[in-house]
Amino acid sequence: MVDATQKFFEAKPESISLARDFAAMTLKAWGLDAPADDVRLCVSELASNALLHGTKRGHGFLVRLDADEDFVRLEVHDSRDGRGSREPQPAIQHPADTDTTGRGLRIVDIPADGWGVEDREPLGKIVWSRFKAGFPGSQDHLG
Image (cartoon, rainbow, N blue to C red):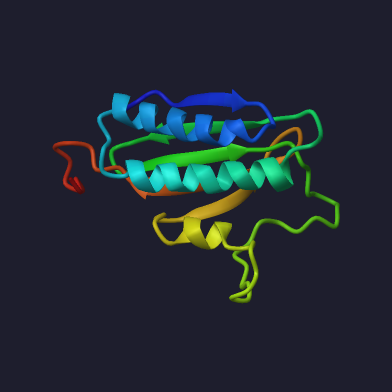
């Protein structure tokens, strides 16, 4: 239904807001207003995680968006290879009330209609989430 699009971002803090803007502009161009706020929130969390935990020094991250009649798929690709290392795969944490970190994937889990982690070739990983598309005129339109 739409062409997937992607954009590479440098490993710097300003890239988080640039990734949010990229996602918002893409969804607007596709006519998808319904999931826009949820996707913006999740791209912010996943890009932050990629920047803090998933990128090797000097490497950035890639944000990819794709959509079909039913779902928008958001992917954040990073360069840190967890295969064969002691690095844990991303998972929902259970932080104490006083902890200041550890809530990112819980924030993604709430609005997303699914999320997961895949290996990326030749290295790194892809953390993805999906959302009901709500294209105008579709049965699942949420607007």
